Amino acid sequence: MLKTDYAKVSKVYDKNKGRLDFPKDQEIEKLLEKNEKITVLDLACGTGNYLLGQKKHYEGKNIKWIGIDLSPEMLDVAKSKNLEAEFINASAESFNLEEGSVDLVVCNFAFLKKGGVLKFRNVEPECMKEWWVYKYCPETYYEDMFRFWPKDLMIYELKKNNFVNISAKREYYEKFKPMNELLENYKRRDTSQLAMIGDEYYNKGLSRVTQEASQGESEYKDVIAFLEIRCEK
Image 1 (cartoon, helix red, strand yellow):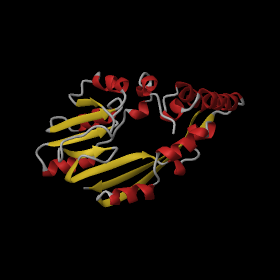
Image 2 (image 1 turned 90 degrees about the vertical axis):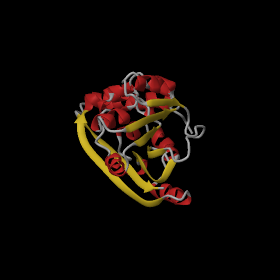
Image 3 (image 1 turned 60 degrees about the vertical axis):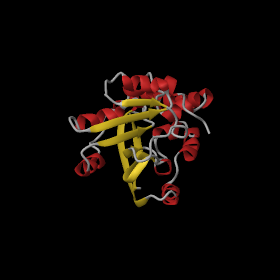
Image 4 (image 1 turned 120 degrees about the vertical axis):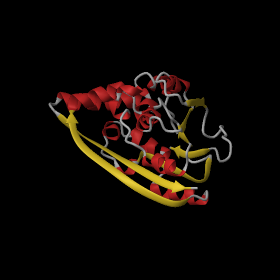
């Protein structure tokens, strides 16, 4: 399976403004109703945008924020945002936290207290085959089928690991956007899919985008599907 070089991606990652807008995480509010102080861990936190968004929503609350990421370059960007969070350069597999030390883990499952909440949200490739990245560079779709588990497999693994009250919610968005924006997005190469693929496949996709744009197409259809799974320990 291919891997993304986030040392390169980190330089342009936050230029995609869609990554900067995080709604208020209601799970944090629910936990604060039961606890005076909570700890929130963002696993694979990247440039810290989730933590930045939630910190603004919960300003003044007694929350310890932790971000873990394998890329030191992405963490450098996160640290530059003065989040007053603890940032740890480590992989999920190699890092251990004290048992019962975290109330909410975002992105992956581990380290939870009994009664803690896991909320996982990521793309759902099989429900967004028309996404522009997959359309112009189809090799990325096949790679993502290895990277992102389908819903049923995810639920099965959670049950095996003694998670309960499991629920799954799918979100699907579709919108027509200017063709020149598509070309800019493709050239920026800041999605993990385009960053991890080899130059040969990437350049073939770029040729397809350029050709379509030169033929007078003014708009393209952008689609995205998210799968959010919530469960409790």
